[in-house]
Amino acid sequence: MVRAERVCKNFGALAVLKGISLEVGRGQVLCMVGPSGSGKSTFLRCINHLEQVNAGRLYVDGDLVGYRQKGDKLYEQAPRVANKQRRDIGMVFQHFNLFPHRTALGNVIEAPIQVKGVRKADAIARGRELLERVGLQDKADTYPAQLSGGQQQRVAIARALAMDPKLMLFDEPTSALDPELVGEVLAVMRQLASDGMTMVVVTHEMGFAREVADQLVFMDGGVVVEAGDPREVLTNPQHERTKLFLSRLL
Image 1: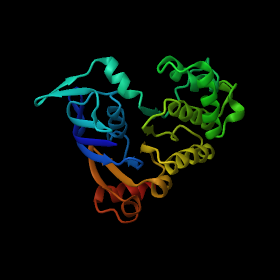
Image 2: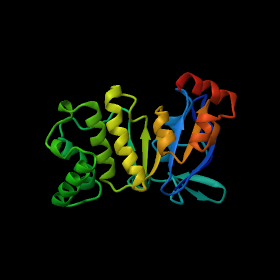
Image 3: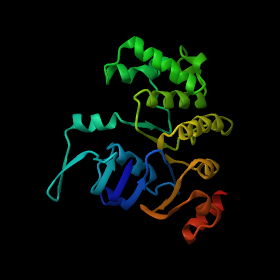
């Protein structure tokens, strides 16, 4: 579902990604861990072309993301083409990003109606199903300011699912939450994984990574330092930098 080939990303003179290569199979969960500034979130944003890569290739479901290739050269796609690709990729951010003037249901149905042209009645029916799926069927008419952080994040997950994505990206979805609210969000993510959703998750929740991920990637300094089975990497890391990072976290 995702294939990265030597992906590089610079911000001015700062090289943030220095040749990332990895693959995520259909229905798999990849968890990315590492210190702040290691490039995890930037890589996630490159997958749906929220950031342009400076070198390398990124493919989602076999399609080159954000570019077309002619000979050996890449040409950036028109924004409408990139936007169309992005419809199939759901993203959940650290800070919810809900519309404050829309109810929970209003947030969930906005994109299907405006972007996909779904009939409002159909979008509402589907939106209620998704709110039930994340355990918030009784909060459909509630505004974000009246919801806890965990509830807002679950609405954000339902909103992403409303576009029927083939891939879900999670950028530290629990890091802005009080510890007691983390579990309710992770429970929804566990269910998504068991339902076969392909997911790339930037997280510091090592228990979740150990339990749910098919693959764990440790990044530092814009490179993949170590990757493999999460239980193996967490219990028997091979690289000294991985050992140091985990010793401070576990």
